[in-house]
Length: 427
Ligand SMILES: [Zn+2]
Image 1 (tube, helix red, strand yellow):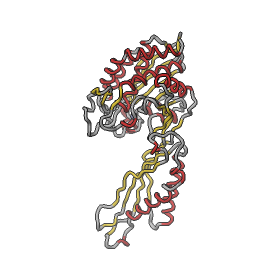
Image 2 (cartoon, rainbow, N blue to C red):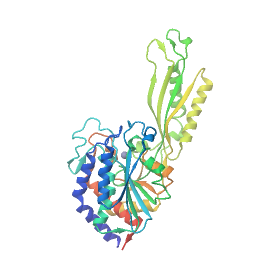
Image 3 (cartoon, rainbow, N blue to C red):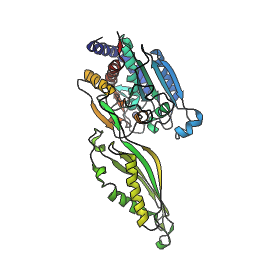
Image 4 (cartoon, rainbow, N blue to C red):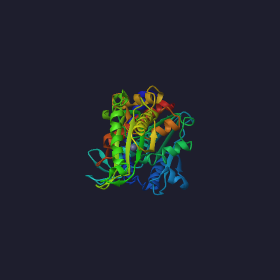
C-alpha cells in the first residue's frame, strides 16, 4: 500500500472513531488516580485493559509484589502498584514498537473552573486533572492501533501498548519496575515511545539530569549572650550559601546556554535551585543544627559526577578553612541526563508522520525535568526511545488542565503511520 493511501485511510479511520475516542478518554479521565498516594489504580488499569481486550490484544497485568511496595513506592501507603501491557502480534514478532504512558495524576489542587474529574468538554477541549499529563497519550496509543484495525491495515511487526503508575513520584514502581523485570529493554524491544505530554508537534529526545541533596551542618547549641560557648550552625549555613553563590553559581559551566532545545528556554542551562533552609528557632539561642536542600538540574553537556565534584570541592574547602565546620551530605536522588540520537529510524518515522499530518516536521525538544524515558534508555539500554504525546506541556500540573480532542486524534494518526513505517505493512 503506498504511503499516500495509508495516510488517507488512517486519517479517515481516526475521524470515524472520534466519538468513541472522546467517550473512552472521558471515562479514563474520570477515574481519580491521584498520586500520592495512588488512588483507584486497579479500577484504572482494568478500564484500559478492557479496551486492550476489545482490540484483540494479549493483556498482562504486572503488579509490584507487596513485599517490595515500601521500597518502590515509599509514599504509596501500601496501595497496589499495577501496570497493564497489551500486545497485538503482527505477522511477525519483530520488529516491535512499545508505546507506554503513565496513568497516575498529581493531586488536583485548587482554582479549578470545572470539576477536576468531570472531564467536561468546552471548546473542543476535555478538562480534567491528568488529561494532558498524560492520560491523553495513552488514549492516542490505543486509538492508533484501533484506527489501523478499522482501516484494514495489517502490521508486519508487533504493536505493544502499556500504561504504568507512579511517574509523578519517580516511576520506580511503574516503568522502572517493568524495565527491572525485563519487560522493556533492548533485547526484547526495537522501538519505544513514551507518550508524555510534550506537545503534539514536538519530538522529545531527552531530559536534563538531576541531583537532589541536602547538606546538614552540625554545630553546638548555646546561649545567644555567650556565643563563644557554642558552634553556630546558622553562621556555617551563611558561609555555605555564600560559597555556593561565589564558587558554583559563577562557574562557566553553570552559565553556558545549552545548544539543545530544552523547553522552556529559561531551563536551557544547568540550574541549581536552593529549595529549603531550616535553621534555628529562638532569638536568644545559637542553633546547633541546620539543613539546606538543593535541586540541581544538569544539561546533557555535563554529568552528575561533575556536579558532585564541584559541590564537594566547596564543602571540603570550608571544612579545611572554617573552624569546627562539620557537614553531612544526604542524597535523595540522582540521574544523569538522557539524550538519544536524532538520526535513528524511530525519530525519522515520527518526523515524517508528523509532517504528513501537521504540515510541518515536528521540532525537537528536551524536557527540563525527568521522565520515564530514563529507565528505558539507561537501565534498559534502548537507544531508540523517544517521548511523543499529545498533551500540552505548559498546562501540566496546573488548575484547569485540559487536552484538545483534535490533538489526541492527530497524535493517534501520527503514531499509527509511524508504526506502519517502522513495523511494515502486510499487503
Ligand atoms: Zn507526565
